[in-house]
Length: 142
Image (cartoon, rainbow, N blue to C red):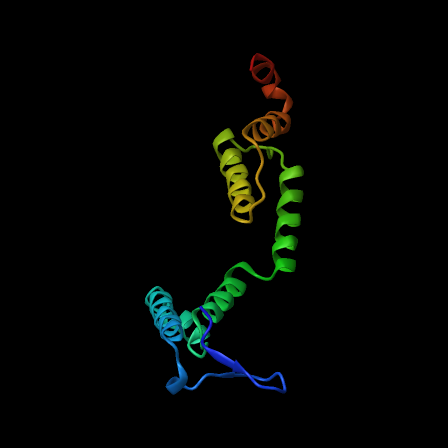
């Protein structure tokens, strides 16, 4: 929640003095304090130092979000890189099926964490297409 504020005639936003808080303002301040406390309790000292100067829980959350997820441009770049990795995916020489599947799963999990999802049938088709020729009899049997 946003802290109570006043907008002056010049359009300048300043914090409201505590003496003029309404009951609703007090609730907002309490909610903000609780939310900040929850966030702070979940952080290590380095992360705490990154957000300790923030006035509101929203500012803290936004700072942490940008730190760990990046801006929308960074997210888009990560998605593009992972989609390309997905599209170019193939089984490497001398790689066993489990190693290939671990690499594939890592790519899929990274994409899902960025809200880019493929259906199960798309993923199965992709895996079947990337198998080497020696696997073709098994692929045809499927």
